[in-house]
Image 1 (cartoon, rainbow, N blue to C red):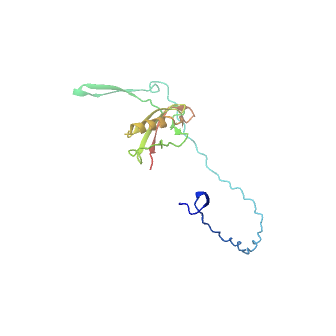
Image 2: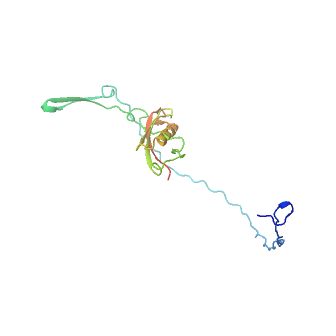
Image 3: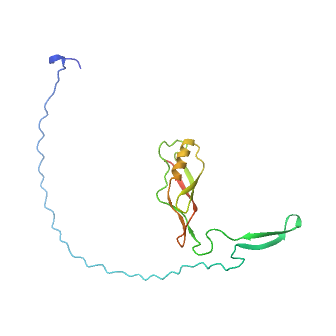
Length: 189
């Protein structure tokens, strides 16, 4: 703006006055129709007769050589026609005994990848994360498949996965045990 004759070298201002807005028009609104509220009869209780379900119980192992986990020795031809022998072991987690079935660990919150500064090389990819969870619900080890190529993001991803808390794996009788569980995690869109 250049000075246009205003006092003290200030530019002259031109303005105009807008006419006053008319008052809002009145609209006739009909009164609401009357509503009558009637009493509803109480709902009759519904009874459903469900058959009882018997949960199968594991029978404890019989004391003796089979209960110790040692199998029977096997015989047969080995390399070069010589007789072979071996011993089998029949022990392992989740089988036999009281509370033998193991329920897997579950995360306390949703498993999400770190979303700050996601490189293009990992955006939209799905990673399978294997968690080793202690009997207390702490993550003790994490394995990512396929490995994350971007080193900086890979370290942030690993630290984020290690920080998750889980409800630990447990047996049918409620005893917590260490476990391994795998979740799929998609990074970005």
